[in-house]
Amino acid sequence: MKRYFCFFLAVLITAMSIIFYCPFNIYANDAFTISKNSTEKTGLSADEAQKAIDANADIKGKDGVTMLLYTPSDSYNYTLKSGAFVAHLSDSQAKAMLMSKKSFQQYVVLCSSLISNGTVFRGFLKTVGIATTGDSNALTNIVDKFTCNYNYLDSINYDEDTQTITMDNTSVDKLREEIKKYYYNSIGLIEQKSNGTVNSIIDSSDFRACFEYEEDYASVFGFKNYKYCLKTRSGFYYFFNDLPDYIYVSNDSNNDRFLPSYNNWDEVAWRFRTLKSDGSFGYFQPVKEDTVIRYDYTLKVNVSDMYFWYTPNKSDWVLHPDWNNRYSTRCVLYSKDEVSLKFWSSYSALYNYLHGDQNAYLSSTIEKTGEDITFSIKDMNENLGNKMDALIDSINSGKGNMSADELQNAIDKGIEDLNKNTEDIKDNTEEMNNKLDSILEALNTQNETLLEILGVTKKISDTVDDIDDTANFNTVISLCGTVFLAIQSAILYGQNTLKDDNNNTAPQSLASNNDDVILYASGGGTSLDYRGGIFGHFPFSVIYHLYDWLKVLQTQPKCPEFSYNYGYLIGKKDDENCIITFDLSQYEDWRKTISSFMKLSFTLAVAVGTYKKFKGGDVT
Image (cartoon, rainbow, N blue to C red; front, side, top):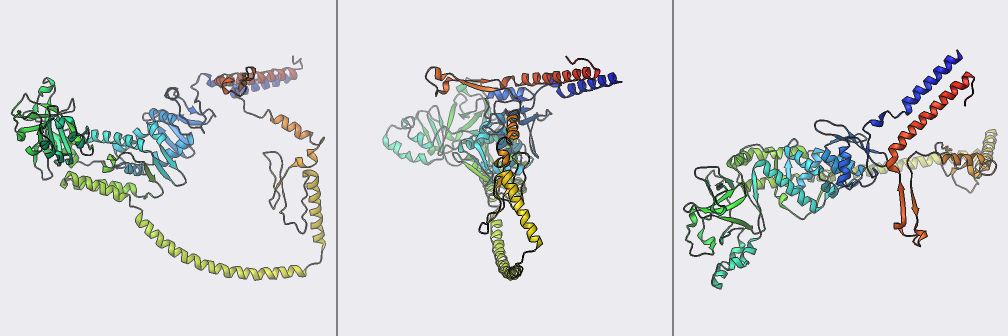
């Protein structure tokens, strides 16, 4: 029976050892550990961040804190979790997080306060220059662009005390350009960038060469006040101020298509057409003779028969007359403030914009450059999302009867009104504060009356105490207890806890030196340590010395890292370049595996020894 029991005990110990210590996951996909602690600014290189993503595993900091959970699905692969906050990230978003110069907790705060809160992020984008509905593709796309670019993450800061979000002007300009590019592509709007200012054209030597006499040049010097100028390579300058409401590229292959000669007739050009708010159509052409300057006066052209065309493949503007199919030349745009000129890729795109329901609109703020933006979450109206949805719905319903300028003004004014959502609240708050001040003043008066009543009661109590000044048995017992506690404190803690009549110091608290056990006496005060009394002196202190020695072994196992300074051998002991650091942390996985086998071996040895001991044999 004894042998059976010993055999069963050995098997049980062996099984438990295998369950608890054997590294079953030695071939599993372990967590990827980055080179930074979770509390540090991450700022990984692109190579290390990509390796972390390619590992397809949880991502941990060097301090062992899990920063990202690997949770693959159809729409995301990583989960950011901190307390109750949870956010799902794609591979690109997770990589941007690891490359950003923010710590794990800073990223969590930024993500929870801005990125993951749709209403807050829409309010932030409002300051950038775009209003979106809560379910718009534009919002989703911008969030992806923002979270997949570590430069944006680095440039934005959130102050938890003031609940204010700020972003520097360099990143704001880049974000605005990205938003414009996406938005224009989504609605079929094309932007023709300005090549310079109109003033630079007037001052150029090429333009001056158009005139033989100084008087002729001086007579057109005022052209620098025009908003736009289209210049051709052949020295044709067209100055103008007013634009039609809408410009679009025609797709009429019978009347509005030709092959320009300047490109060996390889590219198809389509004529620009215009649409006014009254519904009338026209052409985009230099219709005023007195605003056209030509270098070659021998070239006889009828300005009213010349039109501007567009080559979609090359994005070129072309000037071409109907009456001369061989004559065509490319144009370059100049504007007074280097403002770009926008037109629609087709009439279909223009019609959808005017008559369809858009889920996002750009304000004129999107054109600003060189300014930081600040957005206060604390001052944001809770109904901002609903108000923005209502604004976009109202624009969708009324834009069919507006000109281009009227529509843009309506968008700008609507977004500007959203910024004023706290004024009424502020006025109501001031009125409420005045009422509360009056109530508090009345309460203070009542409190003073109550304090006077309590003062009389205290005087009566003090008078009774003065009358009862004879010592009784309870007083003696209390005195003895106080003296005994004082002797105990003097022996155990080396402190005098008796209070003199003139000493108003509160009784001290009693505390154990053990970090896990702290004892406090009533009354608060300074903590008392056993080492200050008899147990702080030899030989009674031996037990604490042993405790301190054993605490040296109380540490988490890890591969060591140590340094060796060979500088003192060559007279450079203070030179940091002479310090060699041996970091064995790269062998941490090996250490864990070997440690597991050592624990298993030890347990097996104990099991075999126990079996032999109970069996009655020699353990060795």
